[in-house]
Image (cartoon, rainbow, N blue to C red):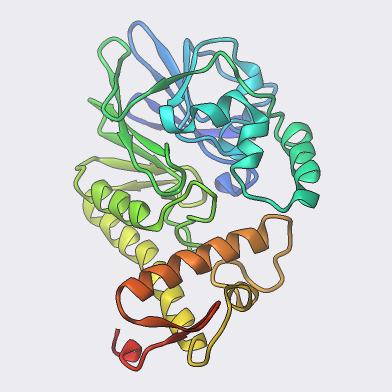
Length: 302
């Protein structure tokens, strides 16, 4: 079924509100879940502007602009994990968390305001891992999956067996851990936690949509996780001679060379540094001289 800015697909009592381009950024996939007493919308995205389905409660998986652009349509309680709450309450805090150079802050803030309609929700409240929302004959349980952001969460909806994993999105782009508050190790642990949850359906926030069955999901997750290893292989090859973090960032581990934007180089620098630090801890990279890093002789056997 198509409604204004989204297409609806049903999985049990869970409605997936599929954004334009199958939820490709700047759009995303939202959820609507109805119980006997309460209805919930999860991650109201850009496609819901002007056509927001009714809800008694809004749950946010994490505070990124593509997951909250449709909040303007809701004058109901809004909740997010405590670790992402300050960013949801204030657009200034949200933009600061992107770690942009000073000259880019005004441009990105204007984009958040004008394109994504982010105003900040100072009345929003927080939840913690394991919180359960009883909708009446149906529950939504918070499963914290940090790494993408500190407060990134999934939601397990029962008895339908639908597990929304948000931006563990299984796309070929791979895991994103480039914000100031992101964490590579935590992201890997979150992917392992996803494997431990046996669901009928696994819903993503972007193009891959909904995967049916734990076996199929596991295969998709394997391919997604392998992107991290490929990034490290590219980095180790590049560190055959001493390089600075800036040189690694220019070489690109995350974005393709043609991609431009104010966040690209800050994300590349943070991603490069996180991988270099981990490879140094593993003995595969060493600091050849102040500020320059190179692969060790044993790195090729990784």
